[in-house]
Length: 212
Image (cartoon, rainbow, N blue to C red):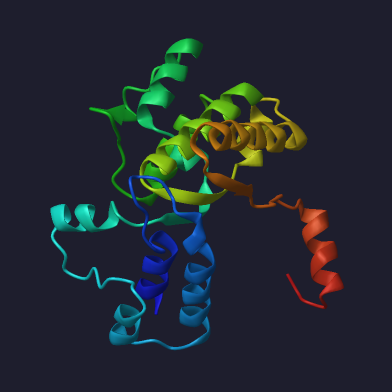
């Protein structure tokens, strides 16, 4: 069930005094494994401590999730950029993003305009240190929401347009994770990614005996 998996990914356990209680991590992992290998219904989810958040009022939902340890996975780091950070870097580089960010929010109305906003916002990250700052800012905000873990990857295409190599991009993201870990105790990992060119895709497809 996609909604159940989504809840498990975002909410795994409890913490006290605003700080993660790492002693419960083994038990929460066991809960996740149970939910992934079985076919639970709503009652079975409730019985192991994962709340049913269906039709919950926003204020009550916020109150409930504030007391939970969280993890976020498969995060596109550019897509997680805070609009205020994007505007700050846009000012640094003399970029006008008034049509992309308005009243502290990204402006888009459909998938095409979303991609345009994504590209425009990504264009402010022009150096490895910009990506380090982006990553640090993201993990800092994540920790502030009670998360203890996150997984991210960046757009090597956007970075390449700015003259940032794949290696430098990975090292910059790793540095941002390290900075956030030292300050907030949150753990992070990088999802290994690399877009294959046409020849590489053909070679891989041939290796798998699969037609492109």
